[in-house]
Image (cartoon, rainbow, N blue to C red):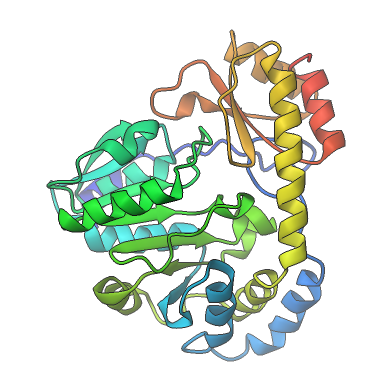
Length: 334
């Protein structure tokens, strides 16, 4: 990391609300948490009097079963962001390009710049047609935030092969993939997957995630992470959550059903992007006016103008049915 850049670069804007009094549609986090998570976290307090296990075998087995890979391919990290930073730091060369979709998660470009690289932005829906030649790393968000674009799995596999031929690593951020029925890219040669427990399991403060890789990429990632980098309670709760198949299925069903319902009502008045994620990107005539209307209703929505290339959009999460109705009626008047 370049310390001069680190001292001058601005923080990325995330826009989520920290006010518990607001109904928060600005963060794409499941409002529900798997049953049993709290007592497991509390039980982990006594175990935290010793260092976390090395390797974190129970967590690795649970994560491997969740995405369908070898447990040895799983590298636990304190949140998906830590996995992203680790990979970007290893495959970003000074003044060399890293291919990044736009609009997309702002931390990708920020991390690339922190490590001296040059973001090469391509439209998110054209990412798989881009030429990876000369890039050390290509980043894909599957499905993409904030657009909800989901890449066809076979097309993504074919693109990964093109990246290998160009000696570029493909980093796939699957933070929202478990809201879909699409398979993970975990285990594919030359591909590094970053995963988080934040979104599906409603635990952003837990800071538990992991990377998945094979071959030389796995060796580098496993060697590059700090020891004991995920706390004992987080490993225990994460292991539990990753085995909650019924919870995942119910959440996925709710999100898919509610997203479709919200899309239909919003589309009666506003342009709405098709989405495979637990959020919708909506174009509105006056973003500031809509934000003010939401604030007056004690509702938080995401000002999507902070994303590259968007200037007339807001993003809204998909929550529970009654909460979604309140958003639609009180903010969007549909």
